[in-house]
Length: 198
Image 1 (tube, rainbow, N blue to C red):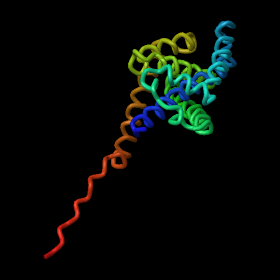
Image 2: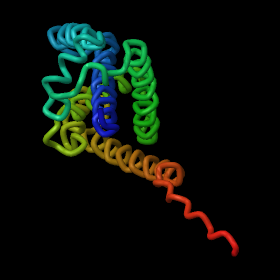
Image 3: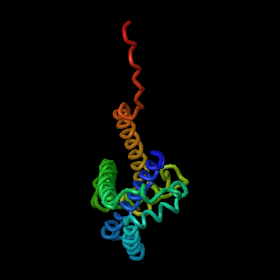
Image 4: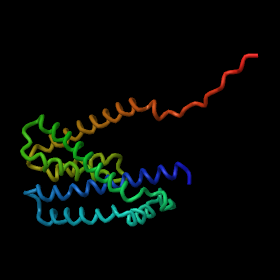
């Protein structure tokens, strides 16, 4: 199997584990969202637990075969179960760090009384935006979800502005990291042997 197929499958598995990690954070949202509807909070927990099923490698293979990009991918290209679980755990930590950045930015507009609630609200908004495939980076979707969940904690304009600032900071950080690591991903030129002296 070509390296491209292997890379495409690995990237798709990573994307799925990131989405499942975002769904896992919905349990925290259900616990901390004291003003939320009981039905919505129950659905958050049920959805989070249902998403965990997809961490099973067999279900992961089944789901990949439903995605056009990986429909014909061989099951042997899917990473082992341990790697899937490690990627899921790492994604949970990554979302915690990303949502903490949103909390820090929001805190510049005033005290954040419940940081864990804001973090879980951000991860919910990020996940829904991430899954909104036709919309690039879930632009607008993420902000709408943040306003829906955090309505009343801050003015809507503040919630949206903070999200935009967070997006800009994320793009700048990713660009910086790409620049730092670019020399490692450049294709190596074949060394041309110097001609031997006569």
